[in-house]
Image 1 (cartoon, protein in one colour):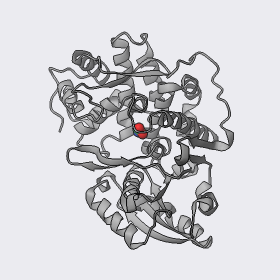
Image 2 (spheres, rainbow, N blue to C red):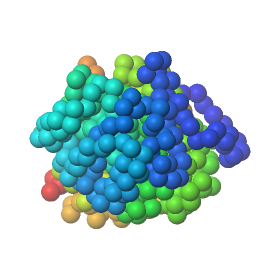
Image 3 (cartoon, helix red, strand yellow):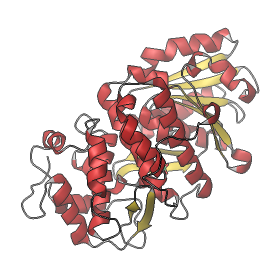
Length: 397
Ligand code: GLY
C-alpha cells in the first residue's frame, strides 16, 4: 500500500452519505452505514427482495436485545420472516450448527434469489454466510453486523467459516453478501470490553494503508470508546472503504494484498490458541492489539521501520485500555513461553511452502508481506513486547 504522510493534517475527506461500494463487477455491493438503519430494514432491503419473504439468522443474545423490534418492522412492511436463532458464542461455528441451519433454510423454502439476513457478530455472519453459500449452491445474503469487529471486518469481503478441532476458520467459502447494513447505534448495547476490543481492528486499517486515518485516531480514539455517533460512523466508514479497496484488488487472497488484512493476526491467533480460544480470558480484538504492537516491534527489529513505531502504536492502544502488559498478566497464570507461541504460529493459514509469512510495516500506513523473518527475531519481539523469554516461560494452562 502506498505511503501517506503521517505528519499531514488529521482531517479526513467526508465519507459521502456513508455508503461504501465493494466493487466486484456483477457482484458489487453496498455497505450502508447509518445510525438507526436497522429501525427501517424493509426500505434498506426492498430493492433486493424478489418476493416479500426472507430468513433471519440471529445470535440468541442479539435477538433478545433487538430481534423482536427488527421482526416487527419487517412484518409490518408485509415481509414474511422465518427466524432461526443460534446460541451465542464462537462454539456455534460448528458442523452441528451448520447442519441445523442448512435444514432450517431448506425447510423454510429459501430460494436462490431470496435473502438470508445474518444478524449478530462475527460468529453469526460466518455461520450464516457459509450456510448461504452451500444451500442450493448459493442463496442471497445480507449482513447486519452488531459488533464493532464485525462491522469493520468480518461482515465485509465474503469470507465465511466454521471452526474445526484442528483450528479456527478452517472450513469455509467465499460468498459475498448482497448488502451490508451497519447501525453504529447498536454498539451501545455491547459490553465495554467487547467494544474496545473492536477498536484494535479499526486501528489496523490506519496501520495497513491509511496514515491519515491513524493520525485522526490519535486525535479521536476516546470518542470511539465513548460511542460518539459521528466519530463511530466515520471510523466504520473509513475502515470499510479500506477493506473494500483491498478485497476488490484481491478477493480470494491469491496475491499478497488481502493478506495485509491479517496485520498482527499471526501473533494474535497464537495468543488466542494459548488460552484455548477462551474469549472470557482474551477477546480476538484484544489479541489483535498485542499483535499490532508485536508486528511493529518486529518491523523495527528487522530494520524495516524506524525506531519508535511500536511505541507510537502501543501509546494509542493504551488510551482505550488495549495491549497493556498488566492485562496480559491477568490472562495467563504464568506467561506462555515464546517457543510455545512460535509452535502455535506454525498452524497459521498463511503458511506457504512451509514458511510462516508475516505482515510487517515500513511506516504507519505502509504494510507488506514477507516470509524472510528469522525465528530468533520473532522470539525477541515476543520477549520484548509480552515480557516473555524462550527459556524461562512455562506452558500456558
Ligand atoms: N479478516 C480478513 C479478511 O477478510 O481477509
